[in-house]
Amino acid sequence: KAGVTQTPRYLIKTRGQQVTLSCSPISGHRSVSWYQQTPGQGLQFLFEYFSETQRNKGNFPGRFSGRQFSNSRSEMNVSTLELGDSALYLCASSDDTIYGYTFGSGTRLTVV
Amino acid sequence: DQQVKQNSPSLSVQEGRISILNCDYTNSMFDYFLWYKKYPAEGPTFLISISSIKDKNEDGRFTVFLNKSAKHLSLHIVPSQPGDSAVYFCAASGSGTYKYIFGTGTRLKVLA
Image (cartoon, each protein chain N blue to C red):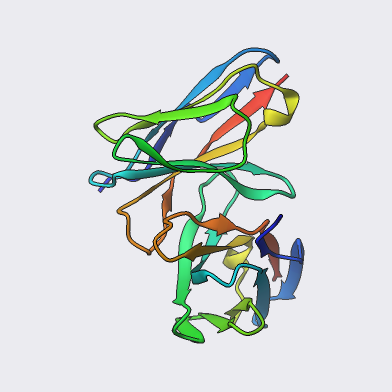
């Protein structure tokens, strides 16, 4: 079955702009989580959606938001981009068991 | 507050020898732990997991040990191979939260 698909793979944005990233989970998975990876900070949890509802949230400012659609696809939005938002953004889907996530390949965001 | 810590950012090991990657956690409510491996430009992939009811889980060349009293887990790779060169993340979850907290990762380099 198809894996987790994230689009786009690469993005370059200017400070102050906003950006939307997309994630299509594995078919049948209703949980989608978003992580930010930066050097030295590991994988920082942003939020998790389950059946269109945000179920868990990390400690990121309100500029970071997300949503999930009825087909479980999820989008993440970052408004008023800052240089420090440059990172690899990873999406992971789960069948809501304890057996962890399947990750997508990520979207590399560069803010200039 | 980093609830899951990987204190060694990098590790180099000779091919054929044992690689030991360590992970410490602070939250005693964590009861399920996973290791992920990440190659550049790819999302992390699941490697091995362990439940808090066990102290060891083995899968081929990979073994994870859990010491609950010390709140410490380790991943052993024997024998190490050049293809094991990657960043390894440990992750922890408390029962029912479906939210995994990741460590900062350890970059393993296996030298041929």
